[in-house]
Image 1: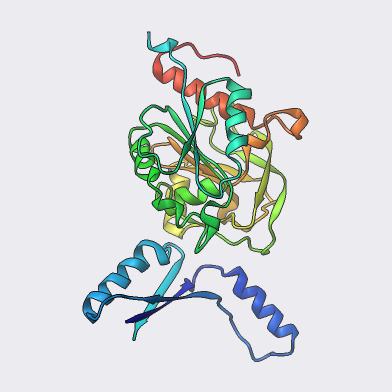
Image 2: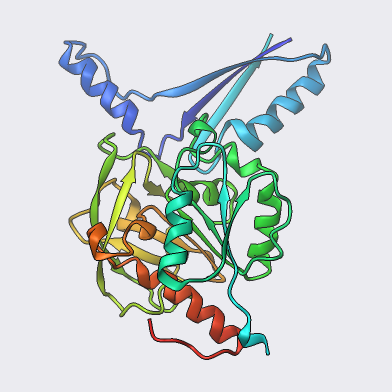
Length: 79
Length: 238
């Protein structure tokens, strides 16, 4: 099974990288771009076939290491 | 007599630490107390009275600064030392590690202007009643260098109010000279008990006029004097 984890800076926390990319896109003529947020994408291969167990384990991985919940949100997909 | 005992310092070393030697030398040259490097796989810090968590790029700063180092074997012993009231000082990457380990509240974000800032910085000593700052005057302006790309201290409103109310803000960047966008110009904070301090500036790089500033020296004399007072020994002049 594979897990795809997305980690992003919380909406109410300043994302300096997102702001820089937003400015760069504007200066390249992509004026339609509004707010930009830059995050992380983590792909995990899991040695399990049990979806319920995988979900609980991935959630624990996010809480413990993959995201810092003081400043970041996370979501994940299993496939 | 307990007062005859010397104060023992540990400098933690993680793969990627690069200010460990500076910390070690600073302890030697400012207060002449015994100091050991302690590799991150150690699980016992009971021999030490103070523990320095140095700057650098522990574990390559992969994922987030301090994110992987927070689970190094030595961190269990560090948490125990914090509970035991021992003095713990995290500098730069050490501050990031202490926040990741939740020994201090908040987190360090990428600098607002995205630039790695490496220069001397004017700091205001906001709280001179901590074991780390007692040899400074209240509101004293000191010169301590910074060198970081991710020193933008962030915490939510409620946490900030707590930090302010409990006098946990130890250092602020001088008004108008915040180099990284940190909330409330915060440069360094302590835990509620006051025995754990984290700061982005590097006092260990400011221990002699030849280094551009000797203002960091009194952090080390403060720690020694606080410890001596607690141990019932005579306090020496800084």
